[in-house]
Image (cartoon, rainbow, N blue to C red):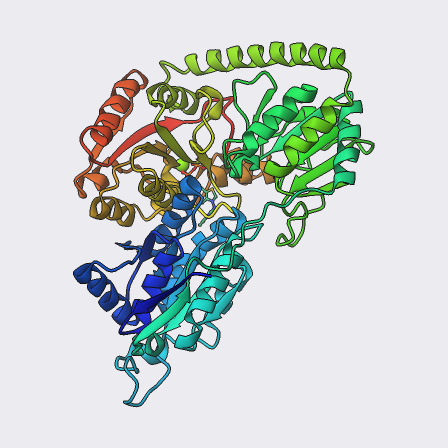
Length: 580
Ligand SMILES: Cc1ncc(C[n+]2csc(CCOP(=O)(O)OP(=O)(O)O)c2C)c(N)n1
Ligand SMILES: [Mg+2]
């Protein structure tokens, strides 16, 4: 087996070389006094051309973790983030919750307050914060959302600890891990370190389903009168999209997307049955007699609509039980504990060998008609908003769809209405993590741009989500690291989701009857001016007829001018728009 000896002076130098050896491209950092040896190690790497991940300063931790998230989404490769001890960790936890629920691997790390109080070891305590920042259990604040946490205690353990972190982050279902790095350990002198290279800790091993359950699921689906597939994240492995198409084709099964976080199924396929977003209802659920739930944590809202008691529910995912969700009680008559990319082609073949071809073509024809009719109705609804002010969300979405080129990657922190967009290729669209930790969009878009520099990256966000995304930190990071991207703000001057929730719980309550929603309103703001402070192109758009031209200018600024851009679109959801 291969070995490599690293010639290093400190543990921090060895850490960076080891990360690079393990395929980590980027080191997203928000530094503090705990970074002394890391900063020094990066300086040596730059001066001597030694192997190290690319250091990227990111001036807010939430943005840094979201960048690692976005980078993974477009590349499939986990990255490292390091923040400042307890306080930096606290700022990053919201984004770690997002990565956790989205099953996105991130090596999240933080310095640990120096341990020693007396002179002696390099890195010992020497400033006021080194006492007050210490915690009894630094990882305690995020343990629930990481798959593993550990403190690097010994230099000799470095390779074992890094490999353990990465193998667990990448094992299915994937997710973030957390490593704390005490200052004295990072500063410790080291002459050389011999490591296994390539590493002997391969974690990627596709999980195939139980063949008996595949037969059972195929029997059920082949006999169904009203089958339905519901998915949110089947496309997290892009090759699963072809598997889902094969299955839908095999049985003419309609595929419904519930708050998709990935491209799961081509929207122009006759079996695409539409979308449900946020708290939208899908009454046809009640008519289904067999439902296949593919990588979908919340396929319907039982308090509103649900399949009938006799309907058979098949659940397919690497972890179809969502073991880390405290409560989730969807029926599961046939579990398929497997990765959809592995299971779907098998299921498609098993269905094909059972189903009556005549019934498939009849159903496919019906689905195709319904698909066409839906598309036409959506198109009419968007066009009906063409002259409306404030600009409608459907019209804004349609204009964005028309402005995007084939090289676009869209990161949607929930306002974009997919009904009005052309179909996306796998890995060209990403929706909010279902944990809903707002602010994800800006950082994820930056990470996507970093991972796919030749693509045009567009973030679509609400005005609330824009502010949660720490826009000054995001725009500064974009400038610092040369990451031009376009942000389109759907600015309705409100946290409409909060208003809507109030109406839903208290339809005849005080807030609804007096049209007053304390705590849900935002002030009018010139968000387009923020990006200008960072050398970007900013425009405010109020006229629906102006939107296409404004999008064109902003995209040219990004593509041709290499500048980041923000369009502040003053808009309002018109009737018929799905609500977040
Ligand atoms: C970190 C965080 N804080 C608070 C919330 C609760 N929340 C959910 S949606 C929402 C409002 C979002 O506003 P905006 O992005 O403008 O979208 P709108 O509802 O207006 O369409 C809030 C505050 C959250 N999801 N995440
Ligand atoms: Mg809003």
